[in-house]
Length: 360
Image (cartoon, rainbow, N blue to C red; front, side):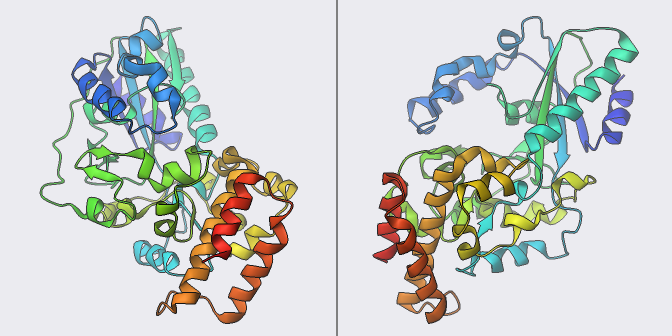
């Protein structure tokens, strides 16, 4: 049955399939400690679900196994040496930087549809069975399940890592009431490497395997809906949606695989746009140009807040004359004018970030 599952999954664009048990009792102390430290920030749903995240059978009664799936997401036209290309983009202050996974179609939609197709194919073979599909859409310990089923191991940056695929992939799950054979975990291979911890711009990885989301740029630019703490704005640089630094520096990502699907190909907007181009968008532009993208979920207000921070960081580079990282005087003037022109019509949250940017 596992060989059939893997064959069906491959035709749907999945790269790997595993099967985990629903007993995650040993993971509960770590989850509670993370919550008790407040590392979940304003993601109240994390605390609300509590230990349910480690109990799939409570989430989907009758479940005895979790089918885990990996789907690679590097765009099909990703060049050799792509990490170096990404690093160069982070040092171009006038350019907007969007996390690689969000440059194509919303992965929630892609994985959910294809996981359901996989479940339907399984039902054709074994008959109707109880199941529910998930992809970052329910209180499940996804990385824990992936690690236990051999999809990879938990890296020190807390993401799943595979020796043959790095970490540039999405995870999805199907909770089932079928007693499928389990797939064994793999040994971790981070060793003494601390590259991901050392490179984090905001020191959000407070210890190996421990992330304080309140400091994470992905959390700050996506999940957090209030003012970005002033002390964390400068390290954000030109990252307007997410952050890939801990993955870019990871040695295992030299083996990261390209997606086989066109869904994750880079869209024209905002894949390689400048900050000024994106700042010029109206809310209608934002909704139209991010349709079908994961970016749309943050809404226009957070989008403008993030752009204001990035523009302020670009202006700071100009003022400090940072070698290689400064915008030209003319570009700086355009940025200041664009920020000022939006200030009076902006809401309180965005206006505060505009003022901060202009003071740079």
